[in-house]
Image (cartoon, rainbow, N blue to C red; front, side):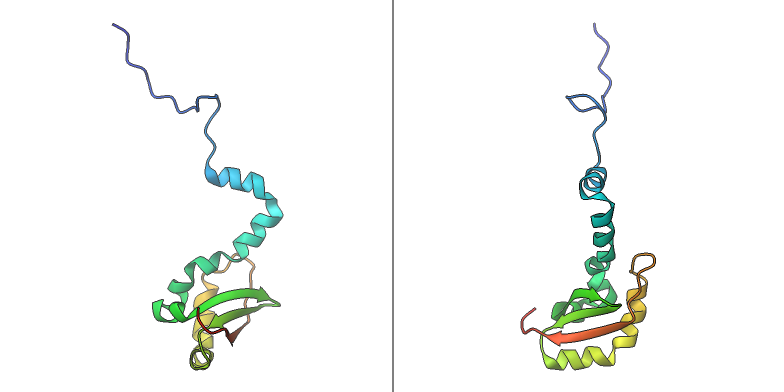
Length: 112
């Protein structure tokens, strides 16, 4: 009787299977990878500002150390302006190394 086959960690075509992360890194290149990592905090927006605020706001762009945030209406824009320092402090924990956000600008777009 033949011995049982050992699992093989190689793909059918040979070689080691590549991780998705490795494939993305190779395909994107360092410059695009750095640009994407700049905005990784967007995925944590709800954790940064809380579920209620995240449901009514969305980070839009980062220019000249200012994060522009879309909000549902002027009442929320004003409320978030009052909470700007708190949001900035929380945001700092989620920024990429060396990234700096010094200001937040809230603008109304209607429905989020």
